[in-house]
Image (cartoon, rainbow, N blue to C red; front, side, top):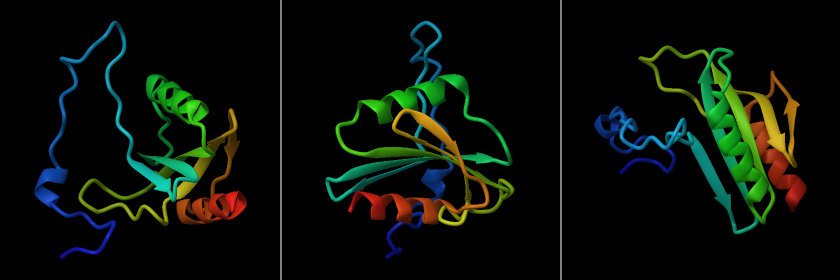
Length: 125
């Protein structure tokens, strides 16, 4: 039995989904690296990128619109990590480069994803 939040099936986690057959004009599906639905009060979306990589335009727009259209408080965290592909990423201690909240991006950096989530949850009560 694995602890909550840990990888349950490592072999399955390495499978890649080919979205090429789901193209609608220039639009193809995107993924979400992390989602927390918190006690029917709020949503937290997390997108991890290696180094200082930016989110692709389409992914950023899709996730911004998703956050904007929810009826409960929601944030989108763009996080960075420096782990090579052969190492697991520590999601809690990755750096929150920027946070999308109430229609605007706020730069952070040098703050962990965990600390941003903890502050957000504290702010909503």
